[in-house]
Each structure stands twice: as structure tokens, then as C-alpha cells.
Image: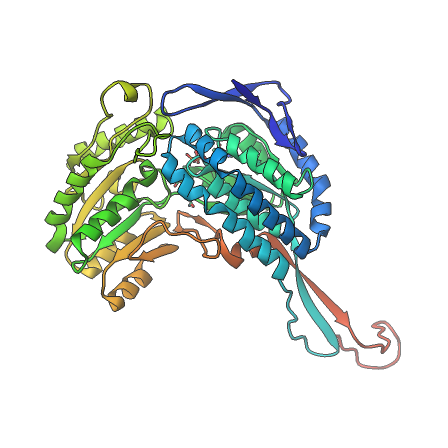
Length: 496
Ligand code: NAD
């Protein structure tokens, strides 16, 4: 079995304590590898290394950083098959899903590499004989804390703008999926990112994660994780006035209006709810269906849900793998029991699949609740598993009210052929990402993040690049007239 050190300063190092921890394959509970168990001392060392390297990287021109990031995109592309199968081993998502997701990642390095190359400063007007300009400069060393559900995608969304803007970084990946993030470090090194700019400290949230979040040596912490984790991290970072960006939980709604083709609506709902076994922050966890098509949609969803092929995630024909951990599976079981106790009707799934290949892994059937009331816990709280809650509605206003009546505000999708209604509803929904006749769509250029308890700040797009910089304003006096405030020359003094 392979043992991994943590990737710091361009090489793999053991933890200062010498300890490690196992990474478990969720399809059968076997240990895939042992990984160094980083803690405070390892975070301190990694930040010191990053601080040393940061001025070198910051001094590279945008064009040079852009070239390196384009090279990184090419190397990443060549290593995708190996990365995809490792991601499957770490988190249990089907190989088809991981291939499709990872194939997109080079776009992030190309997009942000292009931004590094093309960013311009500004020349704001300044009254009088002055040249006034602004430039964006790196923040310095930033801390990136990532979850397990899309290990490389989420890391890439943070690394690409951070690198483009000239920062060094210390990454604390999820303890459940720490291996592929380190391989990204190898790719960066091969592309020409100087050693010490991209560092990974593997470990747990309460240890390495907390040490990173409260370290005075970082200028920003960028976390993706649960809302409670985000609050804890933000409060630790706040003590040092460290900037915080946070992509947190969600309870996205899929809204099917009466003019939607039933088969298309059903396909949309299944894709929104069950991809990644529902373990995505923008999972279509609530399906709002207009009462006129409700029964037809529900009957078809129940039929199609039962046909989803659960199995070994490395098999090409598998459509749903295990959940990431026994803990996550137990949580889903707990919520299914809560839903039943609340009076929702369990229309599909609701149990572990039976039989030999499933018993050793953390499998759970895709599950559909109908007759769900908007205030029920299963319709309010993030379950992060393959559970869809179907809620009927009568009017557009009622649909909007239900969609907005949760603490979260990450995403929603609106399905209708009525253009005016689509935009009207989209604009009334309190969420950062709204799809019209689509779900789960993402692009390197398109801002991603949440309203309300779903987060702070945005990933992707120019705003993400800018959020990894700080503005420096330079005011140049173009006059050669002498200026002496304290001169006893009898003149009235002006400062302009
Ligand atoms: P999590 O909150 O358990 O962990 C996320 C990361 O934070 C991990 O690296 C973990 O080790 C670390 N962490 C945990 N406690 C910490 C602490 N006290 N101090 C510092 N670091 C700590 O989340 P998870 O289970 O890995 O991921 C699932 C969650 O992530 C869901 O809530 C999901 O909605 C959210 N998520 C959000 C987005 C988004 O874009 N908004 C995307 C994916 C996942």
C-alpha cells in the first residue's frame, strides 16, 4: 500500500509527528493509501515555505504566469485518466461522472492564465496635476480548504485564480480525498510553478484546517465546505482580519412549470438530484412541481429512479456509486427516518441496496419523498445524499415563496418555455446561481457562489481573480513647483 507524504516545497514530506491516516475506498471499505497526518507544526512549516516562495512568483510577469498556467493545462490533460480513477477510488463517484468533470479542469488554467496575461490597471481621474493609477497586486500567501465531493474541481476553482494573481498557497484538502490534490502539485511543478508556491498539508479540519485558518501568515482563507464549518473558519480568521471567501451548503430547488414536457422535466429532476449520489452543493434537493403535472411527473420519477444502476463506480455502466463514507450514509438514513416521521411519503428507495457487492461499501438507494411540506426538516436542511423532496405548488408566487423560504441561497433551476416567466422567477429567487432550463452548468468565466447562509464571495470569473488581489493606488505629482506647508511665506496654504 502506498504511503504519501504531504506536498510542501516541491517534495513529499512526512508529518512532523511521523503520524499518518488511512484513505478509505467507499465501495468496499478497504484502505487505498496512508497519508501524512499534518498538524500545527506542519502548517507552520508550509506557510514559512510559501512565504519564501511568494515573492518569486509575484515578481513573474502576468505573461509568464499565463504561459506556465497554459502548460499546466496541457500536463493536466495528459494525466486525466489516472486522476479520474484515483478520484473514483477516493470518493466512489462513477468513472463516467469523474471523466466528464475532470475533462473540464484544464479550462480553468487556460481562462485564468489568460486573465493573468491580460489584466490591466486603471487610471482613475484625479483633479489637478497628478497621474493617478491603480494596480492589482497579490495578497501574499493564501490558505485553501477544500471538501471531498469534487476534490480536484473545487481545488482548481481556487488554485487557478490564486496562481494567476501571483499568490503562494497552502492547501488543506479534505481528509477523505487528499491524494489527487497533491498530484495537482506535481503538475504545477512540472509546468514551471516555483517550488513552495503550491503546498498541500494533509490532515483533519480540527487540526491542520484550524491551524491554517487562524495563522497570521496568511492573507486570505478560501473554504468550500458545510455552512457550520464556514462559520467556524470565518470566526477564527476574523481574529486576524484575514479575508474570507466561503462556498458553503445549499438546498437548491428545481421548479417545473406546467408547460414543461413531462419527460424533459423528469430527466432534469433526476440529473439535478442524483448525480454524485446527490453529494453536490447545488443538488436539486427540492423538486417543486406545478399541480397540473405533479402526478404524471411523480409516477415517472418513481419508475425511472428504480432503474438507476447502482454498482462498482469503476464500471462504465454504473450510474450511481456508494456515498463517500459510512458517516454520510448514516446521515442519509437518519434524514430518511426524519422524513417518514414528519409524514412525507417515501415513494422510492429509502434503504441500502441488498446483496453481496453492496454490503462492504457505503451504498444507498436513490430516494424520493412526495407529499413534502416546505417547512419539514427534509425540505429545509442539507442532507447531502440521494434524497429528492417533491413539493407541489399552485401559483408562480407560491413557488417563489417556497424556493426562498430556506436559510440557504446557493442555486435553483427554473424550467419553462415562457421567457417572461423564466426571467421574472429567476430574478425573484434569492440565490447566487440560477439556471433556466438547465442545472449543474458551470464555467470558469461564470461567477459561482451563494446568497444568505450559502457563502461569502464568488469563485470563477474576473471577480474571483480580483478577489485574489489587492488594489494599490499610486498618485504621482506631475508638478515641479515647490511645496512647503510650513514655509512662513504669508501665502494661504492649500493641499490640492
Ligand atoms: P466539511 O465542512 O466537513 O469540510 C470541508 C473542509 O473543511 C475539509 O477540508 C475539512 O477538513 C475542513 N474543516 C472542517 N472543520 C474545520 C475546522 N474547524 N477548521 C478548519 N477546517 C475545517 O464539508 P465536506 O463534508 O467535506 O463537504 C460537503 C459540504 O461542502 C456540503 O455542505 C456542501 O454543500 C459544501 N460544498 C459547497 C460547495 C459550493 O460551491 N458552495 C461546493 C461543494 C461542497
